Image (tube, rainbow, N blue to C red; front, side):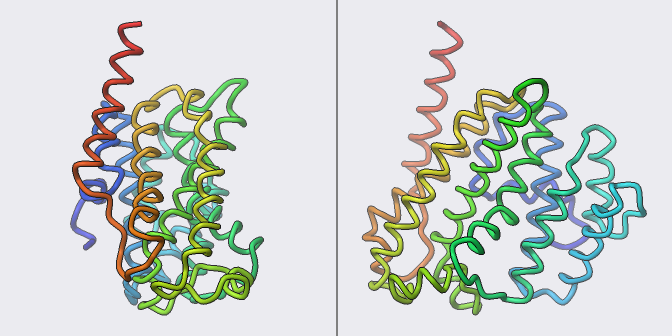
Length: 273
């Protein structure tokens, strides 16, 4: 996305788009801004854009300074404005940048501990920042943040499984070396057991994180729908034969609409109870 396009527009074509439409007012604007910032950085990195290292570095420097330093990039400037309304967790924003550094360097993920660490950097950190924007405060604050981090890790594992062939084509391997030694290289038609194992791991993270949604002050319906839409990607991988054919896994529009309708029915039932 070019610098002259408002970053909040990055959310329009994402899996998060239906969920984001459930947000209202300033909360919606703030979440869209956060998503736009992180998506912009992620796109620059994924596309091997020559601007990526400096843009990640500018965000790192802003985060390292606790938000008190000069915002040197469009992303840092957007977060600086967001920080005027929310106590953004700068440690987690720095953690996200470390995940992006991993991608730029195409570092090898050695073992399951490395895999979990990367998923926390690229996804769990985002869950914690979202918890702050959506109002995780009071006695349940720590539980909400921990649960939202688990949801973020679950979504990151889902991303890795969904995009496995695109990443391989770009010479990025997010499956750990120990998993490859155990299950074999994740080539099409030869990765059923590996995907079964990682889908189970992702499902366990969703189960760990879902209770945190009820602890949020705002955006509960949006986060519930977002988790349902993302988790359905795992079911689609199963329906398509666990990577039997190459390509990015996409949940059909009618199934996504079914999940959105079900989410709406659940909200109506709670409202009428």
